[in-house]
Length: 602
Ligand SMILES: Cc1cc2nc3c(=O)[nH]c(=O)nc-3n(C[C@H](O)[C@H](O)[C@H](O)COP(=O)(O)OP(=O)(O)OC[C@H]3O[C@@H](n4cnc5c(N)ncnc54)[C@H](O)[C@@H]3O)c2cc1C
Image (cartoon, rainbow, N blue to C red; front, side, top):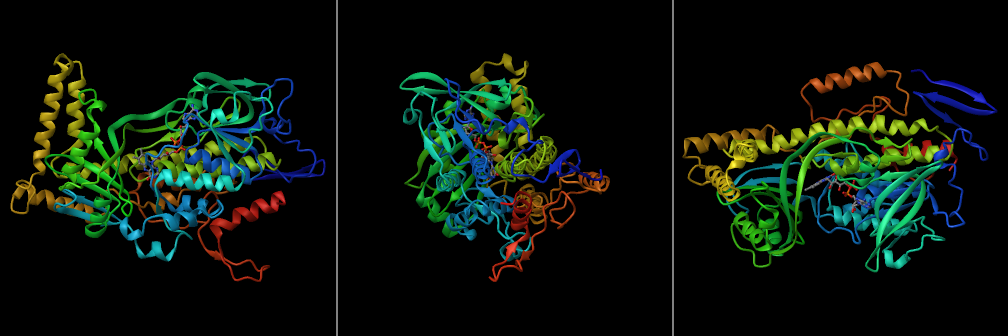
């Protein structure tokens, strides 16, 4: 749709795709949404709950990035998290190009990550082996020279654990005035409490109520052993509360997609001995280990400090989570390592399930509730898209709310957050499922097909299988699994055995042809394009055709730079003529600043 421009009351405005943009004036902001209308209202007197423009539920990486960006853009906010402390159990560790580009704008966060992450030679490979000290079945190096030359992005991808990223984000937030509080540090009264710039730990969002000019959020907290509820009034409630989002549930928004693709047990452990051994002998980020005694995927979060997470497939209800005691997990670690590291320290054991789902809506309750991150989408972690997509959601939403607060855009800009980001989530869900299947193709090639294991498990769980007593079901399942794992013995899996040799040849061709799980997805990471959204695309029909073509053509890993509307501007180094210094900036970083500076005069 072409843009419509005009002037009302001396005020310039133009319309792009249903979003009304206007040049701001210092006084009245007629197009400003009532969402922010009561922003100026200070903490309500007469016992009324305090009012904040924005409350973010969830102090995970996405909630923290969002709070940082909003604060930088001048939007006051507070963050609530139900946990009293930040989890140390590592999940995400791969940070893609686009997220690192966003992190460059967070007071140098990207640089801090680069300086703190392990050296790239320790994590650039995925290794496939029979044990960490046994035969290497294959390995794939995922870094190319162009990654180091920074051809497509001013910054490389990174390998940095989520809990350490959260620590860095908290430091950045402290730097702009945020402080973290426990319930007993702020007491039970909310009256006169200044909530802005606060992260309230131990506060679980448990209720919401739509009011005339906002949302009344109820946050339960434990006050000296007694559960109490704190009420906070806000213009916008942003749900960054993860995959099992309460905000999403309270807003009545459903998820759509596939549930329970796989259940796993995640074992977080330390072993400097193992870290030293792998750094010296076979450094890598992911180790896919297959042997007759055990199978698992080891994520080397930090080889230098010996920090690992082991992922073990898990089949409830025949296998109980309680079966995975520390001792059992240590035994599995030894089976997968192939020797006994003396310093294994299991820190934490957690079950988790893999889903592939996207929220039906990102925005609810009259534009008052917006979902971001895992609250809006949950993917299999294959390819590392979860947190990356969430951080990019936060970035997309933050600059739009900035324009809204400054009266530059109308309320309809909020809808463009959904129309831009939801298709990306659908695309990344599909891609992550494909990646998960690519990862599963390796055990399948070795004769240990996880789809067969899942089918057997389903049959046992069906009404037919349920007539078998539970302990017999368990014996049956484990018997079948050990028969499957026998395919991985040296006797079968060797070049002299015709079956083993053909399986090894097939494995080699999968790895050589790049059909196994990949680490980098530049085409998707940098090449996504918003076909509908905040910016006007004259060539909308063309964009739709192109997207359709891409969907149906064989997916290419190659990133093709595009300056079409809705694409990320390709990276080029620029030097401002007005400045005397020689410092160059990337187009990916400075153009949004120029854009915001020009229209907001900031
Ligand atoms: C094994 C594994 C590996 C992964 N690897 C990668 C990777 O390499 N790269 C990648 O990009 N992604 C990866 N992911 C995905 C990534 O971990 C998630 O996408 C990411 O944690 C989402 O961040 P978030 O802030 O949206 O949610 P979360 O990290 O889940 O944070 C949500 C926060 O909300 C809080 N909360 C929940 N409910 C409430 C409530 N009612 N009230 C108040 N607070 C609440 C929680 O306590 C939590 O702190 C991986 C995931 C797994 C499981």
